[in-house]
Image (cartoon, rainbow, N blue to C red):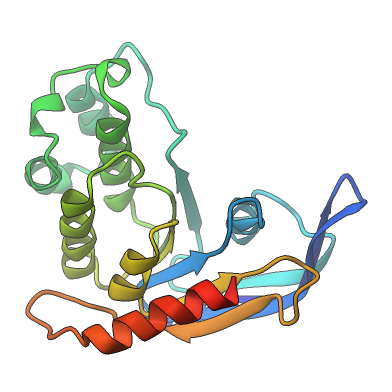
Amino acid sequence: MIKIQCNNVSYAYNSDQLIFNNISFNYHGPGFHALFGESGVGKSTLARIMAGMIVPDDGTIICQSEDTNVIYTTNQERFPGWQTIETHFKAFLPGHSHNLWRQMMSDFGVEQCLHARFEQLSLGQKNRVNLIRYLFQDDAILIMDESLANVDESMREKIILLIKQQFSSKCFIYISHHVREVCKYCDQIMVLRPPHKTPQVYHLSGQNYIFEKSLDSNTLKQNMLEIVHAT
């Protein structure tokens, strides 16, 4: 059972700017989940706390899975500038995955980048290539912090559906400012609010849309309104 449990977590910047005020929540089971909130509310900080990169002032984070590593990826990451994408992937990804990541390069629309260096790519290409690198690592939980920024809507949706189909045993926490996307594709949605609002964490369920599943457009609209009102 994959689970991330946050118990009574508090955190402040520079000990005086309160960001999280005794918040508790959990993500459970594999699937495509979401962390949503207004800009500056602390989503990236909370993601780093869940990944063990930041220690909270109070409270605990408990991760339960066969592989307890939580990987945090953002759109700011970079590859070594002197290597081609193919060279890097061959060196750092498991050998059994070579045919799979080559196919995914094509599916993600970046097959033409295989022989380019990372610094030669556009921002959207960099984000897609970086995401592929993390998808093939043996970690059960992946936090995607705006990992599909600078990628057009149709390609983002294609990528999300492919991830849900091909990596269904993993737990993804998707941080994005696209309300419709979050409501349509995510299962458990956690809305993070400023510390003066009670509760600071608001939960709702998304449509969890997958290939060949019918979509309830009325419920989707209701979900979107609920998120907007909650933030």
